[in-house]
Image (tube, rainbow over all chains, first blue to last red; front, side):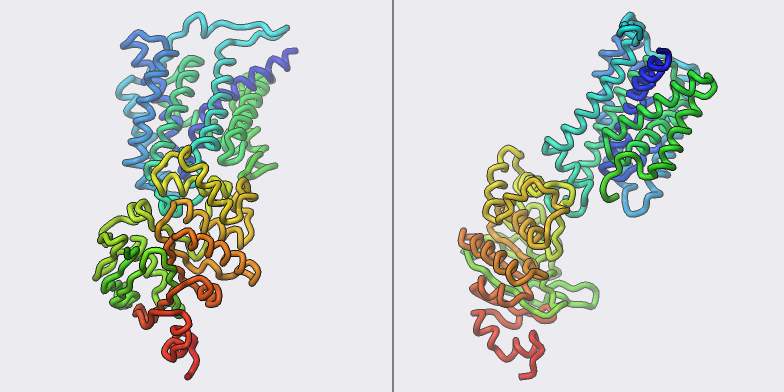
Length: 287
Length: 239
């Protein structure tokens, strides 16, 4: 029974990784932009909520709803005025610019908040648990996983059921032709990054409630996000969720065998998938 | 009313003159065919009309309004639609979605307002059965039809067709001609660049011949095709 428990905890942890990864997957899927500052943006989101919680005395679950529109605007502006200028045939400029952004964000957070680790305040809800038969599940991991599933469903609905989603897909398919149809790719990309940062904010909420964070943990979150996206297959949202789950399960199983193996086991699982299915589990037909 | 008028339009790329003092008018409801050898500047002429290129000299008038300085986007909104020589559908979107994107953005409306129109266009261009197929899976004739449908979805007053019959079998070509005739019968003004001459002459009322960027003939298709100058320059026949 301990193994069933371990695997279920792993699946729920996978929800957190999927939340880390969904924004990265969205941005890559639409504009082939690899955002190396993604992890630092998650950490920044956590600090933003910490400020809101501290200054306004709000619950983190309320603060997230104030942080989301702020992060959307940040993402929109960031894409429109900085990242759009890096897009083109060459893949190097976006990598260099987002790498620089990552360093700048880390140092800005360090300057503003010091290197002390922080945590969003917990309450009764964050430590509550429910018993399902012989297994006890934390309410927070369940909420995290449910949020991840909702985010993926929401993004799929957005992509396949709405006018904006069709504009996203048309631009992703062929930005030049899309602009001939009257779509403005620069604005489409800006909106996509805005939405990605809304998801980042949700990820930041659960990151900040689950464990301590400090200005330097962004790059490690980026690695988990990357691994989840690549395991799932670039551009596939459900694949990203599955990728997150695979890493989560590998980590908890690894930790159950030997506590030192937690992180290692996640990376090993990633490498194994890469060996067996180099293009991920659900690759898109032609990329 | 004159749908389109070009007045002394010239365009050069460096030393190469691709449009040389071109002037002609297209009355509302007419179908005009444009022929000329490769490199005569036919596609450039379309780009000048749609606003993708700006002329160096001269002016372009759409519905008796000077649009020389109007952007391509705005010209599309006021009723100039075009199909491309090489079909460029959004491969991963379905046929219907391709039309929705063109119609919402090309007419500046919300999706709800254009759904029925798009279905109607697909009905007319005989693509309705393929509405939910991703565009990447279409045959060549279907891709050409989609290209035509997408231009029609923007509800153009003036439709520019760029070599839409190229590469089709005779049977497919006849099917496409029927569709274009049907669109023309609705009152849409058409300018059609085509190498498949019999397709062109079975639809258009007037023919324009372009050579080295110059308009060297304009008039009744039969007379134009019979003229010595055209046969020499365009068909390469020594007369």
